[in-house]
Length: 368
Image (cartoon, rainbow, N blue to C red; front, side):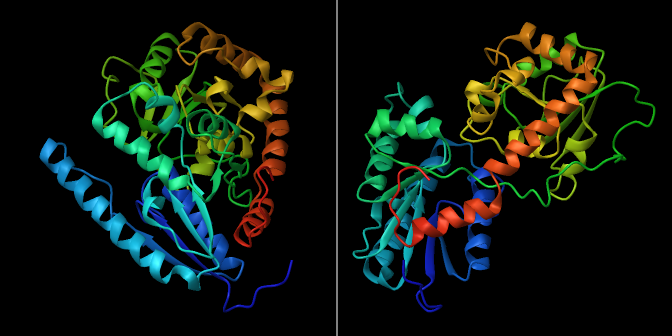
């Protein structure tokens, strides 16, 4: 493989939202752009929207969709006509529909499982249009996904053969912070701390299940680190919890480290940063590993079975796992340390950066 000159190491990144917006994929885009720049690439960023849609009216949503597609068309035409100066063009979601630059390595990132899992049986006009755009976007491009779960879904729905490139984790930032304290927590807590991190969403994130677990378990003090999305609801009748909103990336490793375990009741996830961040901080994760792509290959080892539930709706199984962690702190700590080593091996930035560079220069492997 010949070395590229500095002038040749230029990449275009085209997505719906700019890197760094509130959301797991926008955070991934920020990591991707920073990693490319660290590796000597010049990165040009194109975004079809400046910020997420906030309008709840039907007219507002229709107008937003029209504006979005106009921007996708304009940027796509520009990149098709003038994109030959790039070493690679990286698109995502459905914005790759309009990008057809010849003689340039085109990578297309599928960012989640919604197109396969949640949209599969939905036949509304908008959903049919989105599925069509998703399919067109991946044609004649090197399709890249973040988990085997998404890869399998895309093969079944669209017939693609993607490359699996798991999202990276910064293990220099996410590690166990021993003897930490949080000002938000009451000083007199003498119970194990159970942690939930994520947006408040009953349908996808399973916060309805979480509320039932909190209601039935008074042996744990619950720390709820809730991000964007809906205001936390249904907590009025509950006690024994501390609510934190929009926790910064600087503070969140301390939140993981102070907790006895993290609970993820999600019904579906495309990757789940929360799972690998928690394990990187040596904090065990209680979840249905079949629904969490980033944790599934780690939890396939039988040793982690005390932390696994068969269904994200199984309150009784969550209770059993919580009781196991509470009653076996030594074994739980050992599992956390073992999982941390797995995360460092599988999701380190160095390995991810090397694989990404291979994709950009056109090393076409379907599994790296």
